[in-house]
Amino acid sequence: MPVTILQLGSPRHPGEGLRIGTVRRPPRGVPKSQFSKLNYYDVWLPVLSPSQDLVAFALASRDARSWQTFERKFRAEMKQPDPSRTLDLLAALSHQTSFSIGCYCDDETRCHRSMLRKLLAERRADIVRSSRPKIPARTPPGNRVHEEARDRFLSKQEEQAQAMRAFVGAAKGRLSPIDPVNYARSLPRGTRLERLLKPEN
Image (cartoon, rainbow, N blue to C red; front, side, top):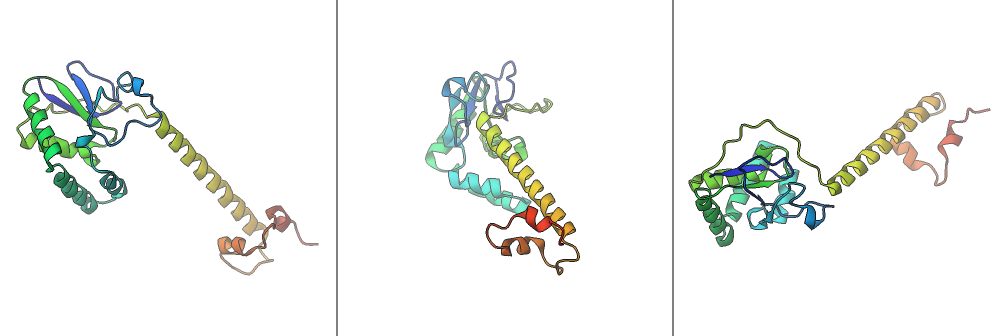
């Protein structure tokens, strides 16, 4: 009756037991009454999540060296009395009953749950070896809102870039070679791009 380590929001599997959310924050945009129904978690246990500062550091990590720094800092946080005792408890319970723990991250190798797996293994916990095919987890509505806003922003940026390229193309022969971005910034306030694109008489 082991512990399963998984991605929160993924479909449940027979025998995984109580699902525990070892995350710093609840899923954004999801009512508390829906946490369990939408397969996020049945019980919230933030004591086994990184501190807010360490979460920010992990999200900014882009290479192996910075991730190793995160792992070292997270291990130090888990040595504190409350997290350490909680890990001891979960390791012991894994030999008595089935339950699961997890986080929202898609990639376990870049998620603190990979460290929880190691910390529980060091305590001789009974851990399920994951061999299931990866199934995309449910994206919290709040996250979707942020993703849609990002996509709109990038689309707007591309529209502006295309307009600038059109302006530079139309202005050939009238302008000396300059950086179009700096040139646009130097224009008097209120100058319209359409006016600049008009052919000279």
